Image 1 (cartoon, rainbow, N blue to C red):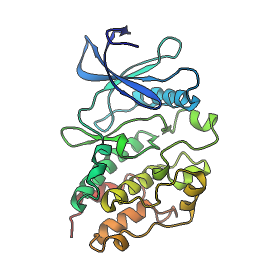
Image 2 (cartoon, rainbow, N blue to C red):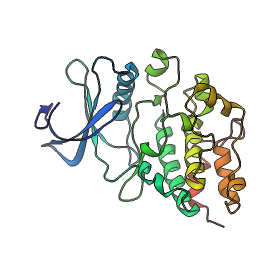
Image 3 (cartoon, one colour):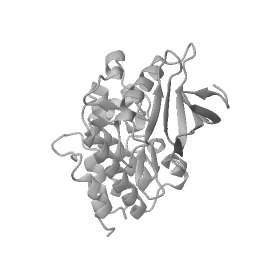
Length: 272
Protein backbone atom coordinates (compact mmCIF):
# COMPACT_ATOMS: atom_id res chain seq x y z
CA UNK A 1 0.00 0.00 0.00
CA UNK A 2 1.46 3.35 -1.02
CA UNK A 3 0.32 6.86 -1.88
CA UNK A 4 -0.98 7.19 -5.42
CA UNK A 5 -2.14 3.58 -5.72
CA UNK A 6 -5.74 2.89 -6.75
CA UNK A 7 -8.02 0.23 -5.28
CA UNK A 8 -11.57 -0.25 -6.55
CA UNK A 9 -11.73 3.38 -7.66
CA UNK A 10 -10.29 4.76 -4.40
CA UNK A 11 -7.02 6.69 -4.75
CA UNK A 12 -4.64 6.32 -1.81
CA UNK A 13 -3.40 9.53 -0.22
CA UNK A 14 -1.30 10.04 2.89
CA UNK A 15 -0.98 7.57 5.74
CA UNK A 16 -2.90 9.06 8.65
CA UNK A 17 -2.22 6.56 11.44
CA UNK A 18 -0.64 3.16 12.07
CA UNK A 19 -2.04 1.27 15.04
CA UNK A 20 -1.53 -2.15 16.52
CA UNK A 21 -4.10 -3.84 14.27
CA UNK A 22 -4.58 -1.59 11.23
CA UNK A 23 -3.37 1.39 9.22
CA UNK A 24 -5.51 4.37 8.24
CA UNK A 25 -5.06 6.08 4.87
CA UNK A 26 -6.65 9.20 3.46
CA UNK A 27 -8.40 8.28 0.18
CA UNK A 28 -10.50 9.97 -2.48
CA UNK A 29 -13.10 8.74 -4.96
CA UNK A 30 -14.43 10.67 -7.97
CA UNK A 31 -18.03 9.89 -7.04
CA UNK A 32 -17.81 10.73 -3.32
CA UNK A 33 -17.49 14.29 -2.04
CA UNK A 34 -17.05 13.72 1.72
CA UNK A 35 -13.56 13.20 3.23
CA UNK A 36 -12.71 9.50 3.43
CA UNK A 37 -10.49 7.12 5.37
CA UNK A 38 -9.43 3.64 4.30
CA UNK A 39 -8.72 1.21 7.13
CA UNK A 40 -6.34 -1.61 6.15
CA UNK A 41 -5.57 -4.51 8.53
CA UNK A 42 -2.04 -5.59 9.35
CA UNK A 43 -1.78 -9.05 7.79
CA UNK A 44 1.94 -9.83 7.77
CA UNK A 45 3.26 -13.05 9.29
CA UNK A 46 3.40 -12.94 13.07
CA UNK A 47 0.49 -10.53 13.49
CA UNK A 48 -2.12 -11.35 16.13
CA UNK A 49 -4.80 -13.53 14.46
CA UNK A 50 -7.39 -11.63 16.49
CA UNK A 51 -6.57 -8.57 14.37
CA UNK A 52 -7.82 -10.39 11.28
CA UNK A 53 -10.97 -11.68 12.96
CA UNK A 54 -11.81 -8.29 14.46
CA UNK A 55 -11.35 -6.66 11.07
CA UNK A 56 -13.76 -9.18 9.56
CA UNK A 57 -16.28 -8.25 12.25
CA UNK A 58 -15.92 -4.56 11.44
CA UNK A 59 -16.37 -5.32 7.73
CA UNK A 60 -19.63 -7.11 8.51
CA UNK A 61 -21.03 -4.65 11.03
CA UNK A 62 -20.12 -1.13 9.88
CA UNK A 63 -21.96 -1.28 6.51
CA UNK A 64 -25.14 -2.25 8.38
CA UNK A 65 -25.08 0.83 10.63
CA UNK A 66 -26.61 4.20 9.89
CA UNK A 67 -27.24 7.56 11.50
CA UNK A 68 -25.11 10.44 12.76
CA UNK A 69 -23.50 8.44 15.57
CA UNK A 70 -21.35 6.20 13.33
CA UNK A 71 -19.08 6.92 10.36
CA UNK A 72 -20.81 6.23 7.05
CA UNK A 73 -19.32 3.23 5.23
CA UNK A 74 -18.51 3.57 1.51
CA UNK A 75 -16.93 0.24 0.62
CA UNK A 76 -15.13 -2.91 1.72
CA UNK A 77 -12.55 -5.20 0.15
CA UNK A 78 -11.98 -8.90 0.75
CA UNK A 79 -8.84 -10.63 1.99
CA UNK A 80 -8.23 -12.48 -1.29
CA UNK A 81 -7.07 -9.29 -2.98
CA UNK A 82 -6.91 -6.39 -0.52
CA UNK A 83 -8.88 -6.17 2.70
CA UNK A 84 -10.11 -2.69 3.58
CA UNK A 85 -12.99 -0.63 4.87
CA UNK A 86 -13.61 2.87 3.50
CA UNK A 87 -15.52 5.15 5.81
CA UNK A 88 -16.39 8.77 6.37
CA UNK A 89 -13.53 10.73 7.92
CA UNK A 90 -14.76 12.46 11.06
CA UNK A 91 -12.84 15.73 11.60
CA UNK A 92 -11.21 16.42 14.93
CA UNK A 93 -9.74 14.28 17.69
CA UNK A 94 -11.01 11.51 19.92
CA UNK A 95 -11.70 12.00 23.63
CA UNK A 96 -8.31 10.40 24.27
CA UNK A 97 -6.67 13.74 23.47
CA UNK A 98 -8.42 15.28 26.49
CA UNK A 99 -7.01 12.98 29.16
CA UNK A 100 -4.58 15.72 30.16
CA UNK A 101 -7.55 17.87 31.23
CA UNK A 102 -8.86 15.45 33.87
CA UNK A 103 -10.73 15.79 36.09
CA UNK A 104 -13.19 17.76 33.98
CA UNK A 105 -15.91 20.07 35.30
CA UNK A 106 -19.06 18.17 36.23
CA UNK A 107 -21.17 20.10 33.72
CA UNK A 108 -18.87 19.04 30.88
CA UNK A 109 -18.91 15.42 32.03
CA UNK A 110 -22.71 15.60 32.08
CA UNK A 111 -22.81 16.83 28.49
CA UNK A 112 -20.31 14.22 27.26
CA UNK A 113 -22.18 11.46 29.07
CA UNK A 114 -25.51 12.45 27.58
CA UNK A 115 -24.14 12.56 24.04
CA UNK A 116 -22.38 9.21 24.32
CA UNK A 117 -25.46 7.65 25.92
CA UNK A 118 -27.57 8.86 22.99
CA UNK A 119 -25.07 7.34 20.55
CA UNK A 120 -25.14 4.03 22.43
CA UNK A 121 -28.94 3.98 22.43
CA UNK A 122 -28.88 4.40 18.64
CA UNK A 123 -26.32 1.62 18.29
CA UNK A 124 -28.27 -0.77 20.50
CA UNK A 125 -31.46 -0.12 18.52
CA UNK A 126 -29.51 -1.37 15.50
CA UNK A 127 -28.76 -4.66 17.31
CA UNK A 128 -25.09 -3.89 17.95
CA UNK A 129 -23.09 -3.85 21.20
CA UNK A 130 -19.81 -1.96 20.80
CA UNK A 131 -17.70 -3.74 23.48
CA UNK A 132 -14.81 -1.25 23.35
CA UNK A 133 -16.20 2.05 24.62
CA UNK A 134 -13.26 4.17 25.79
CA UNK A 135 -11.92 7.68 25.11
CA UNK A 136 -10.14 6.71 21.87
CA UNK A 137 -13.33 5.23 20.36
CA UNK A 138 -15.41 8.40 20.78
CA UNK A 139 -15.40 11.48 18.54
CA UNK A 140 -17.79 14.39 18.03
CA UNK A 141 -19.22 15.92 14.89
CA UNK A 142 -19.06 19.67 14.39
CA UNK A 143 -22.79 19.77 15.18
CA UNK A 144 -22.06 18.12 18.53
CA UNK A 145 -23.26 14.52 18.11
CA UNK A 146 -21.06 11.79 19.54
CA UNK A 147 -19.65 9.38 16.95
CA UNK A 148 -18.57 5.86 17.91
CA UNK A 149 -15.68 4.34 15.95
CA UNK A 150 -13.76 1.04 15.85
CA UNK A 151 -16.25 -1.83 15.66
CA UNK A 152 -13.77 -4.71 15.52
CA UNK A 153 -14.79 -6.09 18.93
CA UNK A 154 -18.51 -5.51 18.45
CA UNK A 155 -21.36 -8.01 18.62
CA UNK A 156 -24.32 -7.99 16.23
CA UNK A 157 -27.41 -9.83 17.36
CA UNK A 158 -28.09 -11.26 13.89
CA UNK A 159 -24.55 -12.03 12.69
CA UNK A 160 -22.02 -14.73 13.63
CA UNK A 161 -19.84 -13.65 16.55
CA UNK A 162 -16.45 -14.66 15.15
CA UNK A 163 -14.53 -13.45 18.19
CA UNK A 164 -16.55 -15.65 20.51
CA UNK A 165 -16.28 -18.60 18.13
CA UNK A 166 -12.52 -18.36 17.61
CA UNK A 167 -11.09 -17.15 20.92
CA UNK A 168 -11.53 -18.25 24.50
CA UNK A 169 -10.22 -15.14 26.24
CA UNK A 170 -12.13 -11.84 26.11
CA UNK A 171 -10.73 -9.06 23.95
CA UNK A 172 -11.10 -5.43 24.94
CA UNK A 173 -9.50 -2.61 26.90
CA UNK A 174 -8.98 -3.89 30.44
CA UNK A 175 -9.86 -0.81 32.56
CA UNK A 176 -13.16 -0.38 30.66
CA UNK A 177 -14.20 -4.03 30.30
CA UNK A 178 -17.52 -5.05 31.87
CA UNK A 179 -17.29 -7.91 34.39
CA UNK A 180 -19.68 -10.20 32.47
CA UNK A 181 -17.24 -10.10 29.56
CA UNK A 182 -14.83 -12.08 31.75
CA UNK A 183 -17.51 -14.79 31.94
CA UNK A 184 -17.89 -15.00 28.16
CA UNK A 185 -21.08 -12.91 27.92
CA UNK A 186 -21.16 -10.76 24.76
CA UNK A 187 -24.87 -10.23 24.16
CA UNK A 188 -25.81 -7.79 26.96
CA UNK A 189 -26.03 -4.09 25.96
CA UNK A 190 -25.32 -3.11 29.58
CA UNK A 191 -21.68 -4.00 28.91
CA UNK A 192 -21.44 -0.72 26.97
CA UNK A 193 -23.12 1.18 29.81
CA UNK A 194 -20.59 -0.24 32.27
CA UNK A 195 -17.77 1.04 30.04
CA UNK A 196 -19.45 4.45 29.85
CA UNK A 197 -19.68 4.45 33.64
CA UNK A 198 -15.93 3.83 33.86
CA UNK A 199 -15.35 6.73 31.47
CA UNK A 200 -17.62 9.10 33.41
CA UNK A 201 -16.00 8.12 36.72
CA UNK A 202 -12.54 8.66 35.23
CA UNK A 203 -13.37 11.97 33.55
CA UNK A 204 -15.03 13.41 36.66
CA UNK A 205 -12.55 12.20 39.33
CA UNK A 206 -9.28 11.76 37.43
CA UNK A 207 -8.90 8.14 38.58
CA UNK A 208 -10.29 4.90 37.16
CA UNK A 209 -12.81 3.08 39.37
CA UNK A 210 -10.99 -0.26 39.17
CA UNK A 211 -7.41 0.93 38.74
CA UNK A 212 -5.06 0.24 35.86
CA UNK A 213 -4.93 -3.55 36.07
CA UNK A 214 -4.36 -5.50 32.84
CA UNK A 215 -4.36 -9.04 34.28
CA UNK A 216 -7.39 -11.34 34.20
CA UNK A 217 -6.97 -11.94 37.92
CA UNK A 218 -7.08 -8.22 38.61
CA UNK A 219 -10.06 -7.68 36.32
CA UNK A 220 -12.03 -10.47 38.00
CA UNK A 221 -12.06 -8.46 41.23
CA UNK A 222 -14.69 -6.21 39.71
CA UNK A 223 -17.07 -9.20 39.79
CA UNK A 224 -17.45 -8.69 43.54
CA UNK A 225 -15.68 -5.44 44.49
CA UNK A 226 -17.50 -2.13 44.21
CA UNK A 227 -15.56 1.04 43.34
CA UNK A 228 -15.17 3.82 45.88
CA UNK A 229 -18.14 6.20 45.63
CA UNK A 230 -16.93 9.36 43.85
CA UNK A 231 -18.03 11.54 46.79
CA UNK A 232 -15.43 9.80 48.96
CA UNK A 233 -12.80 11.10 46.55
CA UNK A 234 -14.36 14.51 45.90
CA UNK A 235 -16.78 15.81 48.57
CA UNK A 236 -18.28 18.34 46.13
CA UNK A 237 -19.22 15.57 43.68
CA UNK A 238 -22.92 15.94 42.73
CA UNK A 239 -25.10 13.23 44.26
CA UNK A 240 -27.13 12.82 41.07
CA UNK A 241 -23.98 12.21 39.02
CA UNK A 242 -22.66 9.71 41.57
CA UNK A 243 -25.96 7.81 41.37
CA UNK A 244 -25.78 7.59 37.58
CA UNK A 245 -22.13 6.54 37.53
CA UNK A 246 -22.54 3.88 40.21
CA UNK A 247 -25.66 2.50 38.53
CA UNK A 248 -23.68 2.15 35.29
CA UNK A 249 -21.05 0.21 37.26
CA UNK A 250 -23.59 -1.94 39.11
CA UNK A 251 -23.01 -5.69 38.78
CA UNK A 252 -26.51 -6.75 39.85
CA UNK A 253 -28.67 -6.62 36.66
CA UNK A 254 -31.96 -5.57 38.34
CA UNK A 255 -30.26 -2.47 39.78
CA UNK A 256 -28.17 -1.63 36.73
CA UNK A 257 -29.26 1.08 34.32
CA UNK A 258 -31.21 -0.30 31.40
CA UNK A 259 -30.20 0.77 27.89
CA UNK A 260 -32.39 3.05 25.76
CA UNK A 261 -34.25 4.50 28.73
CA UNK A 262 -32.56 6.14 31.71
CA UNK A 263 -29.06 6.99 30.58
CA UNK A 264 -29.70 9.48 27.75
CA UNK A 265 -31.46 11.69 30.33
CA UNK A 266 -28.02 12.59 31.72
CA UNK A 267 -27.91 15.54 29.33
CA UNK A 268 -31.16 16.93 30.75
CA UNK A 269 -30.09 16.89 34.41
CA UNK A 270 -28.90 20.27 35.73
CA UNK A 271 -25.89 20.65 37.99
CA UNK A 272 -27.00 21.35 41.56
